[in-house]
Image (cartoon, rainbow, N blue to C red):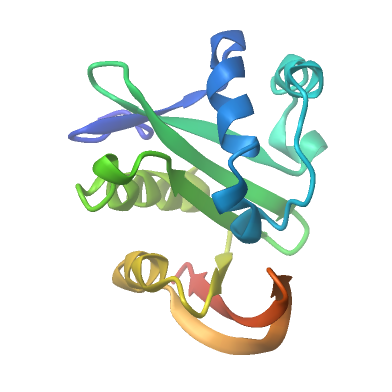
Length: 174
């Protein structure tokens, strides 16, 4: 079995054709509190990002993959960020864009594939993620994949006039 191909989805590299999808995602204000974004991104900036997406994870310190159905529908994105080769760790973020595509197992399968890739091919020792205290779906997703809550960052994010707590989850490769 290919590392980045699952039963219902596969993970693929970014393509120039993803410009409109990424532009839409990055400019969706409802998602900004998750990504700590405060300003919109132009198509020009996203096009530049896509032109540099070929850079190796060891150089770029990040990797963004597209979650695609076997019917080649773009469902979302899964990211490695703050990639730290020396300490063998990376942050993980995931987004299944459309509400009607959530709770169908796509996020679970994408996370399983990414974990396997990170531990098998990138030789990472640990993965971590940051999840808002109110994001029950993400807490369940990561917990079900073996991530453990190791901390609570109080008043960590200022969103719409109030502070929100954020959990830190971690998965150690044993």
